[in-house]
Length: 134
Image (cartoon, rainbow, N blue to C red; front, side, top):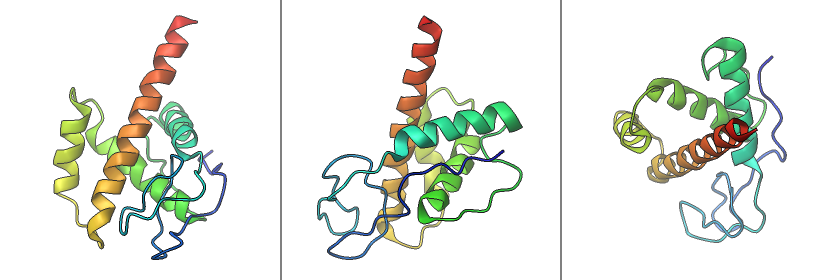
């Protein structure tokens, strides 16, 4: 089963209407800098989804995935990024190298995707450490 458990449909900046994932309270819009008015619990859900996909399919990206919301679009891209850099010793360096080779429609998308991936990776590491302590 693929992961489709994201709360909220999407978030658009109230100022410039840019779609992004406000994963922290008052996170600035990556395009105009306007602070988000409500955070979305995307990081924890994405970390859980990545772990579930890896366990069930052997990869972060499932063989078939139909996104039903903007959040799910962000998530499937994150899945692909994690697969592309899986096994690298330096996550951030591998992420930067990978993102440099990608094309983005909008200038702010690369940095926003990078921030999301780093936060999700940190959450996954924390979850792994927590499970190891049990």
